[in-house]
Image (cartoon, rainbow, N blue to C red; front, side, top):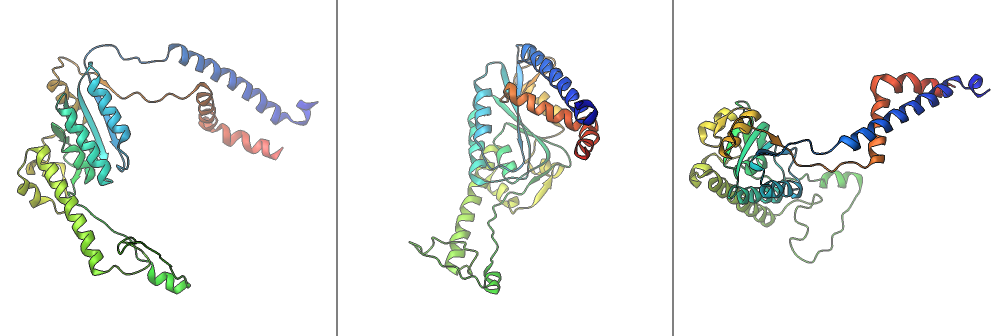
Amino acid sequence: MFLRRHPYLFFLLILAGLGTVAMVSLAMVVVTVGGDSTDGGDKVGVIEITGAIVDSQAIIEELKAFREDEEVKAIVVRIDSPGGGVGPSQEIYREIRKTVAEKKVIVSMGSVAASGGYYVAAASDGIVANPGTITGSIGVIMGYTNFEALMQKIGLTPVVIKSGEYKDLGSPARPMTAKEKSLLEEVTRTIHRQFVEDIAAGRAMATDKVQAIADGRIFTGEEARKLGLVDRLGNFEDAVQWAGELGGIEGEVETIYPEKERPSFIEYLLESALHLWDQGGLRNRLAPAAIMR
């Protein structure tokens, strides 16, 4: 009776049941045979920094883990980032400097490694970039949008109660005073000086030489190499091979990535079910029929 009245729904239930059995079987196999498939032996650890640098904790933990792993003889930091926050960039820089005292660290630049991305790279033993990699952008910027005219137009009046003259520094609801601008410019100059000095220390370059090109301009990897900001032109594999050589690894260089937290059994089933539902157009073929019925 149910089959006659709801043939599409019955078909969906059968399909769902078969899919569940298949996924459970697959998950059992993964749980049974899963695990770290890497063999013992000397390796090069690979750490990836992708996107804006807004938090440093995960990268710091990965650096520490590879630094303490006896099988990891050298580290490659793959950077594909336009930069980010000053604090996180400085924290990663410092952790790389601590790491190079114990193990060789080579940076591989992707499509872009600029501003904070270059800040981090400068801490390493060597930098490999593609000829067309966008890098440099050694500088500091602060900015915000003033909404005072818009707020006046729509009839909004901000009310501020503050404990000090500069507590609402950078307020978008009023013009910046000359004293406030001077204060922010001094902060920017201080951070910029730190940036230049850290690059000079990391790259073993004269501070005035770095200062001369630290005006925010960007460079291609080819230009950066001529300026001493990059050591070699090449891709990720070239960086891995260089790291392996510096780490004393003979023959083919094996890489290892930081362990990622594995999902629970239930999370794995749910993710697999959603993935299968999206594959092969099942959602598009079956869902409209179910709705129509």
